[in-house]
Length: 330
Ligand code: DP6
Image 1: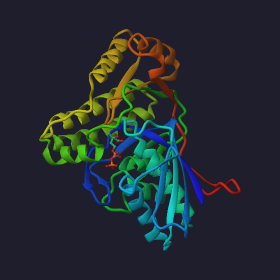
Image 2 (image 1 turned 135 degrees about the vertical axis):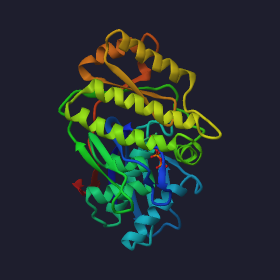
Image 3 (image 1 turned 180 degrees about the vertical axis):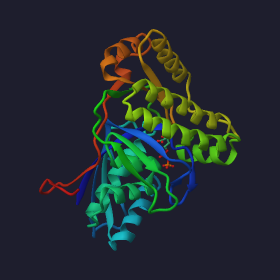
């Protein structure tokens, strides 16, 4: 039995498209910030008494259909470790599921950590990152804390994440505007594939990301939060342009998403250095220097309720432990 805790991450340069859907090899590199406030804790126990995998999320037992993606992932761990038993998986999500707050990132990172340790595999963080990738692309980056780069690579062994700065030594912070925590209609998996195959802009996106990765790393080196925010904002808008330009076109934005974008821009026009980014859901994340936090919050509460705003500093990488003796397994 093993337990793991992994935090979500929000991409500042987005992953939006796969080269290999089976192995989840992305089309481009990407770069993210791991968040302290949103995480998943997962316990895995391989049990000879079980006749199927049993998965609970927030204490609710999943149907076999809903547990399929978890079971497929456990199958990889069984193959690799030679274990035959089914597993009991108990997961607590401190992230609103499927609202574009990257719950699959923390979920599959935690599952990779707990399942591999429970199966007796002792993987290092790079190997864990590769394993987590097989569950969900963004989970690749959630093995590490702080600012993280996912190298797209070209096969299973070369596609993994690496920390750029695990413990931030400057004030980069994020605030999530919780607009809607309902499940989304188009999953990121479906959405990105539609963009790769039908958006006429996809080739340009690959070039945009290559340039943004370089500019973002330079900005991080300079601890230049306005540049980081600006690049992240443009990168997010261009990712969302791929959804609008797919056939059929679609969007993750709701009217409240546009309201939030306008609120951030208005604050910026008033001299508060803040920037936005959005993922495969309507929620908006705001990027700023923590010394400006109070100004950002007081500006946004003109439009949103205070309890819709969740502040999160950078968070740590995965932790894995044995609950029986509290011993760390990583
Ligand atoms: C918009 O990692 O959820 O959050 O690999 O199909 O599971 P799959 O997709 P997923 O996609 C995340 C997309 C994104 C951008 C990002 O996190 O880089």
